[in-house]
Image (cartoon, rainbow, N blue to C red; front, side, top):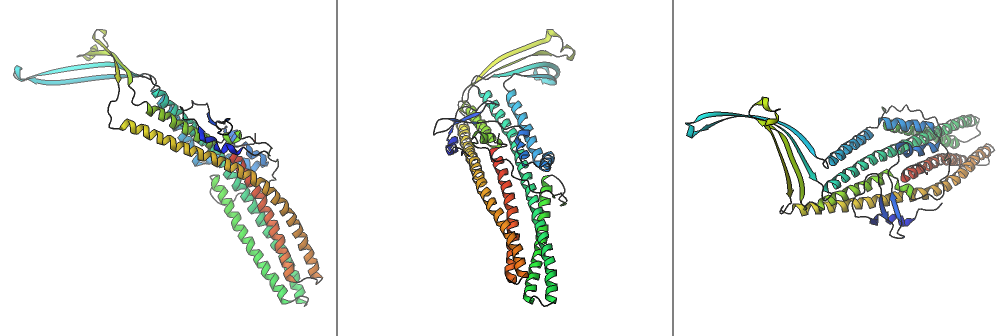
Length: 460
């Protein structure tokens, strides 16, 4: 298949330092080699994000993933963070519009004046006011603040999708590990039972003086090791069950059914995978959105020395009698414009701009790192796909030949053509090859999971 252009690893070097992108739009990153653009798209919806799990043809896996998504506390926290980011975006957008306030003030005051022989005078006042304030966004400062909030909202939404993708991957890994542990345990049980049957036959032959004590003792030792392996595999199986149950939000009781077999690899990877598939990764999109947010904050900070123009106004009534507040004869109003600019702030304004630039540099570095890591994961998975496929073919041959060698060894031992050590060695090799084949089958499935996670979803 065509390998993803390695020059795309340098795509982040051309990240634009202009203003942050508007919501729903994308950030274009130039490729320094050929000048083409690499578009970082938004994350796909949950259904398409985890659609890749159906390629394994395992209905139980899909059910387990749905259960994990419904009961994951981390996902609940991420969704709450997204709702908080949505509220923050609405707050930042509200500053672009006029604000209205309604106030009712009542006061009663007593005063004494010396020229009146300290006679006390009591006064009473009441006021009903409707006030308004509006800052004209002459320089786009409020727009930048809103753009930053919207970018953070999109990043938070992408974090939710990234976590869903991660949960699906964790459940798939844990499920296939459980199926491998089940097959390894069953293989150990079958091998132990077979050896126990053969040991009984050797016991009878020993009683008749047909074999030596050494042959019997070596076989007994191998049988004991086989029984110990069964217990070890049982412990691993229960641990795998509990690991999966925790991911599903269940109590780790090691009761999960695992009688299924490992699924086959099924469809091959389609040739000519596009680099645009990597661009849809939710974590990559979230990193780009956070970079867009810091760029908007930088634009905001660069305008903090410019004057601010605002308009304030109020209307209402004021009277010494509470009953007159709704009487238009006592109405008052005011309107005022305010133009203010900072002349001296002890270096605060420059420090804010320096801080925003440092945050942009930091976020850009994190974005570059995320991009490089994404392509590294894809390249590793593609490379391992071919290596594991070849390894599986060779291991299938080795397992088949070792099994035939074991069968032949028992026949030759019965005829006295070989000694017991050769026989037991042949059996160990057959068991090891069968166990290794199961492990490689799981490794291929795990690597395919890694590829889907690296691509951010399915091959389409």
